[in-house]
Image (cartoon, rainbow, N blue to C red; front, side):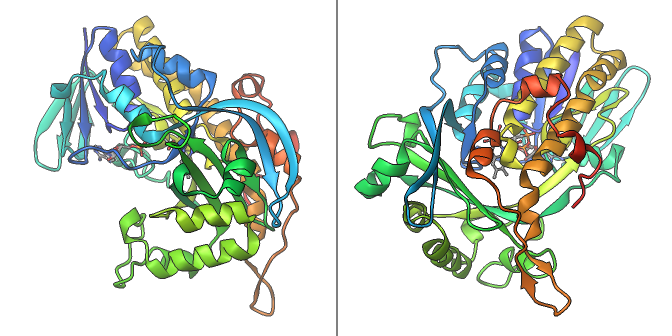
Length: 421
Ligand SMILES: Cc1cc2nc3c(=O)[nH]c(=O)nc-3n(C[C@H](O)[C@H](O)[C@H](O)COP(=O)(O)OP(=O)(O)OC[C@H]3O[C@@H](n4cnc5c(N)ncnc54)[C@H](O)[C@@H]3O)c2cc1C
């Protein structure tokens, strides 16, 4: 039995901590935030690999993950269906996964208010110091502390998130408040709307208390919109009182003017069904979209995983699945090689290229949104949109790419070397 510390108690950290605990290790999670992390995320698309990782983490297979949809549709600005395809999928929510994983983990091992600020390694151990001056020592540290990872900042300080040039407006709307028109033509589907250079998508998720009964569900939307790094993004990240949040604005602080503007734009460029959803969503919020790719994820007795290691734009819809996969590989390498640097190196050998490919595929899927907002010689912003075909978007977004990754086909050859846009 080895002593193993996990940095970050969100989905990635909970996956790996549960798996290692089930192998009999002495595991503790150090989580920066106080209180429940609930309410952080919205909808999550599931894949078979996610269900598998949950099972290995100890979540009973009988637990229902969420709402099943059978079909994808793309709506035009007039609300008519432009294209449709069958693609059965289960849509869950961040909160649902968080509770399923957290319920498996002993609360006395989940330490909160613990921000890791420094670490050092000796031959046999890694020493960790938190902001509150508490110290911990373990044979391994698995860092799943997110896109702004403090652990990564110490080990690979040059690896930084890069803004992709657009944001994702998000929110969930109660099924019960929607018109019959929207319920009939959109609610039961994974829906898309493709205004020039932008992308709206949405799908049904469980309602409060994981209620999946008709009438009790919610519709989760994600609307990708270009926002220039120099002006529009800083403006969006500033609340109604003028306070700026450069690393991400809390949902409750998003300025009402920005929400009003987003809703007004929805009425003019989106299908009316989606406009109704943005209108009736009580607290829409947004996240800036970033790319993050590591060239090393094992550092002797420390490993990076989840968003701390790689962040693919959400078009791939597999951040959580990837974290579950990485946790599974870390646990299996530790089972084979013990809690040693060799185990973490084996994890890196197995996952480094795959992580990089996920980021590239996500860049490939999102590239057409960056063709917007480029400044012309006259100084005006203009749209030079690459038109995307509804069928291609529906068949590529948030689908299971595990086989493509294994075959090295997740990114078209011609895009492999021209990722930066
Ligand atoms: C718009 C959008 C849509 C998405 N849709 C999907 C989807 O459909 N399917 C999917 O699979 N994924 C999706 N994702 C991605 C997914 O949400 C993440 O990839 C996933 O949750 C990764 O979690 P993580 O545990 O690695 O990191 P995080 O959830 O960021 O957790 C990091 C944790 O570490 C803690 N922490 C930070 N610093 C420290 C420190 N110094 N010390 C201790 N603790 C620390 C934080 O408080 C936090 O709890 C989406 C993301 C976005 C933005």
